[in-house]
Amino acid sequence: MNLKLLWYCTKGSLKLYKTRDGDYTTMKAKDNIFGYEELNGKIVGETEYRDYIVMNVFGKIDENNKPYYYADYFCSYDEDELTKMSRLNHDKLVKYLGEYSGLVGYAIQIGYLNIFEQPKELKDLYVKGTYHNAEQMFTDEIQIDGEWFRPLKKAPQNMMYVYDKDGVKYVLISVHPEWLAMILNGLKDVELRRKVLKEMKE
Image (cartoon, rainbow, N blue to C red):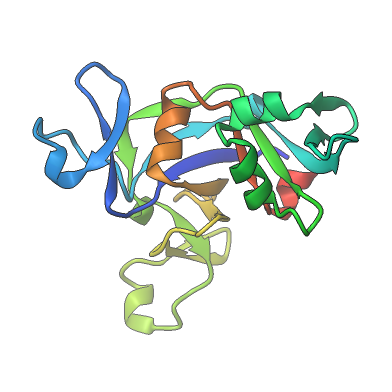
C-alpha cells in the first residue's frame, strides 16, 4: 500500500482554528474574537504512506471483566496504551468499537503528519467517473490516461479514494475538529476506525 492520507476537517458547530502561536484549537464561531481562519471543510495536511501503519484491533475480556486489546499479531496494546494513544477513555473505546460485535476495528498509527501551510479544498480533488452531462464534462471534468474524473463535491463520512489532477491516488479521511486538533498538536498518535478501505488492509 503506497497511498498518502489526506486529513480533512469535518464541518459543524465546533470550529477548528490555527492560533497565532501555531497551535490548533476548537471553539464556537462566536468565541473566535481573534479572527482566526476557520479550517472546517478543508484538507489540513497529509501523511506519507511510509509514516503510518494500519493495524487490526481486537478486543478481549480478561478475568476481571476488563477489556484489553491487541493489534495484529506482532504488536500488542493494553487498554491503557490504546486509550492514551487514541485519546478515547474506556467507555468511549468500548462504545465505538462495539461491545457486542467483538470490539473489532482498525488502528491507524500516525508517525508523522505534514501540515499544509495553505489548506487545500475538496474541489482540488477528483473521483473516478463522469456526471453524464455534456455541459459539465467540458467545464470541470478531466481525462487522465483515457479515464474520466469528476471534481469531488462532498467529503466522506469515513474515508474514500480520491485523485489529484495528475491522477495520483490518495485516501481522504474525515476527522471531527476536536480529534483533528489533537492530531495536529501531536497529542493523538492513533486514529481508530471501525472500517478502513481495502487497500489499507494490504
